[in-house]
Picture 1 (cartoon, one colour):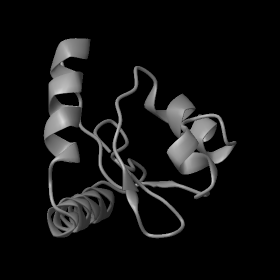
Picture 2 (cartoon, one colour):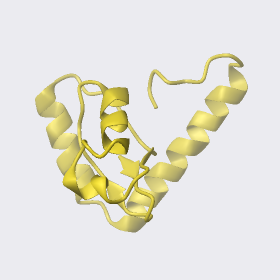
Picture 3 (cartoon, helix red, strand yellow):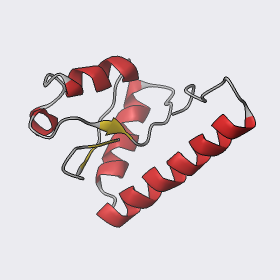
Length: 95
C-alpha cells in the first residue's frame, strides 16, 4: 500500500515491490497514482502466491481510510523498532 502526495492510499500487488514503487513514481505504475506523485510505501507484506496476494489486496482495498492509516502507522512503528534494534539492518525484508 502506498500513500500518494495528496494523502490518499493506493493498494496493489507486485512481484517486484521496489520496481513497482519506482514505476509509480515515474508515472507508469497506475493511472490513479500518475497524477498523485510521489508515492511512498507505507505497508507491504509477503504472500506465498499470486492468488494469496490478490486476496489480500482485495481485503486491504475494503478497509476504511482510518483502518488504512492505522495499518500504515503500525507498520512505521514496527520498522522504526527494527531499525533501532538492528543498526545497519533497515528491515527491508518485510517492509
